Image (cartoon, rainbow, N blue to C red; front, side):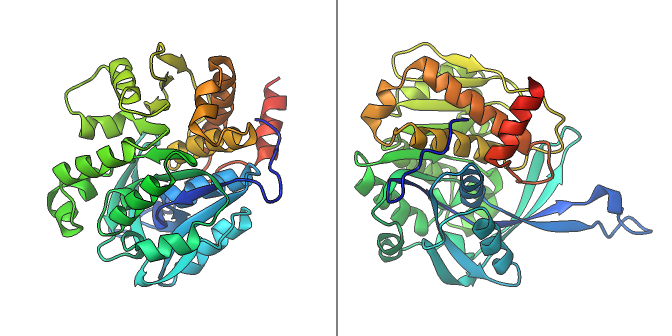
Length: 343
């Protein structure tokens, strides 16, 4: 992990997306005498909050652009970001409720989600709000997840991406949640498979960096199991860098006109994988900012050797997140301590 090279008044990482309260199960607490009262702990989450917090803990100058809804859990979301050094001047105080996700964990720590998000604050962005809060120091803009493909706010996000395209580095993570992207629940939010594909196509056309998972592709491109080919294909759509994650399998790295590279994550004792992809993105974007890579030409000029070094650091950051409950990314000091202990 590179040293924090941020300069006061210099470019910042702006992260645009949703707040979500994750209700995580507490298996050790049991479910009552009849097994009908499982216990959960409420933890701050959501793609944008996770990325911003992870970047803040790594020392990046990071600004969170989010609509903070109402309810008793809203204050903990704000405090979580604040404690990690995230600039909160990009928050909008919203009248709508905070989003809620009920998380189920598989035997391997993988997460499944049930969402309570209808009418939530996160999907209501307007052009005026975004113009007011995005600031003039953005070097990298990261967008994605549910807010980027859910109306009406997704349209305002797409227009901001289009306005900033070519001026800053644009990062995108589709982070598909199938039950919200299609079917009855998706329809209640104004989503359908065709509409979500169309909205993501619009964003990919302007993205410089895309992080997409094998799970995303299973929904976006069902039946195509060749992940190397998928990585190459996505890199041919316009981005200068595509990262394709596949759980604990090696990360695939694709750049236009170059061979697909791979990088294995470090072995760790996995508690759960909540926030792993978000932490990976934060590690990458933090080091790109430190390296001065905040434009497409700078990204294209980055050598594969240097890029692999940056991604090796980002994979470690994501792996350490997986050793803890929920999205709880490490600090820069913790990453350095792990490297020293590993020899």
